[in-house]
Image (cartoon, rainbow, N blue to C red; front, side):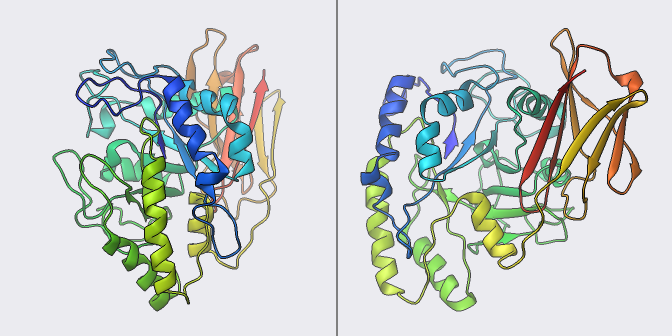
Amino acid sequence: MDTEGPVTDNSDPTLLESWKKVDVALGKIFSPGIRNLIRDDSGKSFKMSWFFLDWVGFRTNPVKRKLGYHKIRDHYTKTWSAQIKQFSDGMYWHYHHPPKDGVGNHWETDWLWSNQHEDIMNHLIIDRKFYPTIFRAGGTIENNDASLWLENHIPFDFSNRAPFKNPFLDWSRAPKKWGVYHPSRTDYQKIGNMKRAIARSLDLSGREYTIPEEEVEAAFSQAMQTGNAIFSVFSHDYRDISSQIEHFSLILRDMRKKYPQVKFVNATAQDAINRNLYPTKNIPKIDLKIQKGTKGLTIRLLSAKHMFLRAPYVALKSKNKEYSRVKVARMEDNTWVVDHHALRNGEKIGVAVCDTRANFAVRVLTL
């Protein structure tokens, strides 16, 4: 679910323009009546993966978005945390790159013009002790510049919308199989040798596209033939999708009857990719320690063998409440240091790491 909060658009009266209306729709999604429509072979209800957005970096707000850091995520954690935990849903990151004109409902394709993505990361790490390890691009707009940045920061990506293409986005050359691929460094749509993994997800039902039954059957057929498929659909929280879920559950019911030999498992975005890429391999829990000393801040990992990041991501919040990213220097295989010249008393520093399975650890320290 692309979790963007309420929106007011006179051209589309079906959109939910207040948190009250969004919460009514969410109440349906969190109800056992809806969740139990799609039970897997072990009897577990279907899971949602919530991709939270921060509406920051915009100068105007024509459709009355909830602008500001953490506005969307905090509403969910305050209002729906018990239900998210009850159904073992996932909580991840959705990002809309702000446009050069600053208009709140415009798209942007130039990833390099703004560093807003890292600014949001800094806030998430220090303010919420959260590091995003699974990503969905706003508007599913991705390009090679974005892909290269993601390769250095985020292991899993659910933005592949193949074969969709319009003037802002292009997934026409990307794999159309229901699974994951490691992209090429020179073309994010082609299979290559990057570490990060991209999964396919299509619109459940929207203005431009509604997933056809043929795609659902293609996923079941692929699973029967190859032993594995990740089937994913997406929508937005500013729509009431309860009736769409009901309709979709009937399609899934018929496909499961048609393909009884296919094992059906409900999973979060993280679990789905891990089941696909690492079905039998477990790795140690991240053991991250930070310590302030006379020479600066020392960062240690018990083991860096399975770490996805080349180095820990270090964010700083100054006494003036300004956020920035701080460089680190590697001292040994599992040890890094932040020079004391970059640090001041009273500041907050946040250190984040993640592994190849999209697990993360964050430590925040007041200097």
